[in-house]
Length: 139
Image (tube, rainbow, N blue to C red; front, side, top):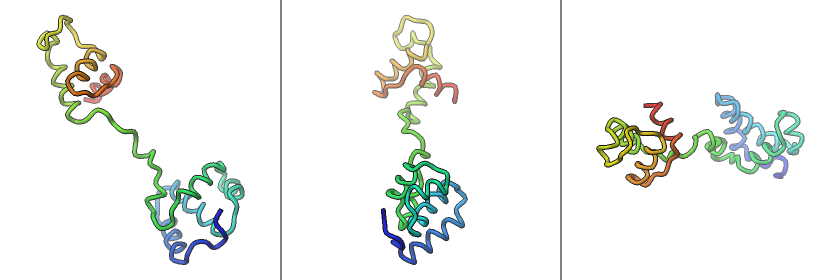
């Protein structure tokens, strides 16, 4: 744990300014963790004061960089990686509009699983039938 007054005056000024101006409560809380550490508070004292978990305090104490405000943004808020590209979705819509027999299949209707299998062979992108159906519902 860093020593009391480990932040420079400039770092402290930037953090205080950002804490006052930022609309995101989570980011303000993460900045406050660093400021309280700078005042000599322990992880447990900070966790009790802010009513958050000890591991949360420990995580942001290590990962929060007072020189990079972007470090306070949690990467999980960006969402998961999407396998289905825009081209995949366009191809899916084109395939659904045609009959399976036009692609050499004997069955009369497309199902999510059949579409997923066909598109995996065509594009190399493996999705489940339920993922394919979810994409179609959005379209």
